[in-house]
Length: 394
Picture 1 (cartoon, helix red, strand yellow):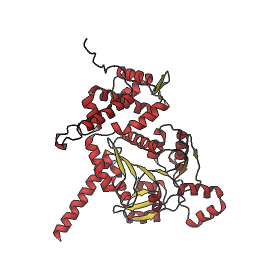
Picture 2 (cartoon, helix red, strand yellow; picture 1 turned 45 degrees about the vertical axis):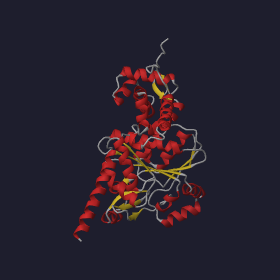
Picture 3 (cartoon, one colour; picture 1 turned 180 degrees about the vertical axis):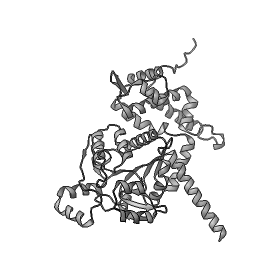
Picture 4 (cartoon, one colour; picture 1 turned 135 degrees about the horizontal axis):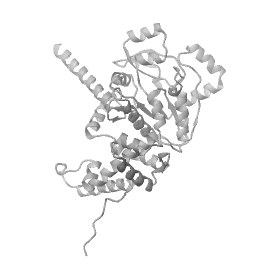
């Protein structure tokens, strides 16, 4: 009797897809244990899976794309998913049915939503589908250039396409989710991108305490660090503490507030022992506007050549700090003592700012986009060429 061949057209769970991939990797490594490297054909996990079961990986990619859209916009309709992914509504309907059958989403008249199991799986699978090989090479280059622990690059340029900022924030949220655990103190900065990160954060049962990294500034409530801290706490079912000290108070006034306000001292103590810091990097001129820096101080900042800002510190292109805004919260000197720092910043227009703050000592795990990454690479290469020309003249 002829043996029946396995059929891969039926719905398969994403977990099975990656169990198959890992099994393929184990088999391949065992098989090639004593084979010279020159004869190796398969080099990556993706290559192993594609070679073993090509249609399985393609199906997993489609389901992952749908999961990402559901996570970002739930409850979401099939047509909206089709518009975002480029799939037909019929394909989306079939994929949604398969994901629902596997307990990863729920489908109701209001739209498609994630289950807790789906949220966790999305976090676990993010690294598998994130980037092309060419982008991974650029990530490795930027790890060296910026002295980061890790760099993740999403496709596109958020300075030119606002939808890329949404994808950037989601990638940042998925990275943050991997570091959440019970009893952690999580500090968050403010800003539009960080607000999107908080919204995209998968729900978790980690019992964390969330605090703003610094006092507030500006007038937009939804981008304030206090608001973002509350959003993250709700997503994690943790607790949060607020910091009611506006940006720009004098050191003398801050000292008075510390003496008079026990709550302020408690929140500040939590901030200074943060286990995880989530922060953005801004363009110096724009941040000076948002922080409503007085004209005289702004002139000092601009004549000093500031291009980047984070946590109230402004740095010029070579990383020298030219201005610091007084506030309660984390200082630049304390960043090295925070176990995990996640930086989320992108767009070609922010490239100089990201590079400047990295040179100023802002390091951690950076989530950025192709626009910023390529611009940083070009800036550094241009500077290296100029240095070489100057040396040759000498």
